[in-house]
Amino acid sequence: MKKNIREILSNSKTIAMVGVSKDLKKTSSIVMKYMQNFGYRVVPINPSAEGEIILGEKVYGNLQKIEIPIDMVDVFRPSEEALELAKDTIKIGAKFFWLQLGIKNLEAKKLLEANKIEYIENKCTKIEYQKFFLNNRQPFPVLQE
Image 1: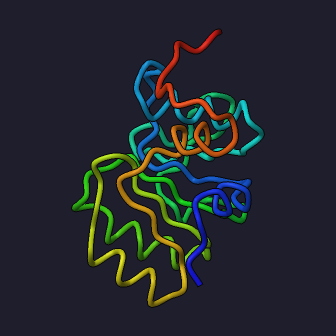
Image 2 (image 1 turned 180 degrees about the vertical axis):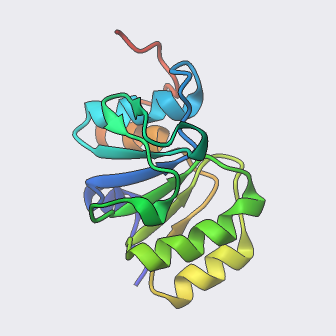
Image 3 (image 1 turned 90 degrees about the vertical axis):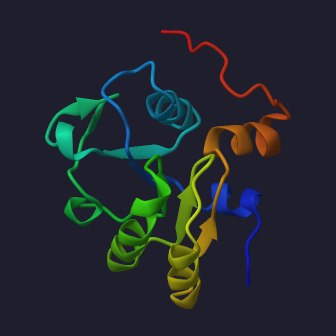
């Protein structure tokens, strides 16, 4: 049974965010900080920053190296990388796979749905959180330090 976005965000307390940047002004880092501010644990995935700390969390080189259970995989990478990330999502047992704005992959969708993993594409977790829980549609307000 397909869950709605409100349910998915309510049931995803630990998010692996693929493509988080060390540059805190980049969209992925802004979204990570935002979701952290609303109580989510966000585990950054970035091979070029593996072992470093971004926004207080250890960075992992790929999904399979994460040492804790993950509810959602949230992807800030090109569409052509989604299928491999979908395969890793299945291996780690996450329940939800979320592709950010502009990212879609039909093969990944088919694979995930065949494995009973909810698939969302072309949506921003931050914008959807604001819409469902804050009634706020401003996509990227300046974050206070």
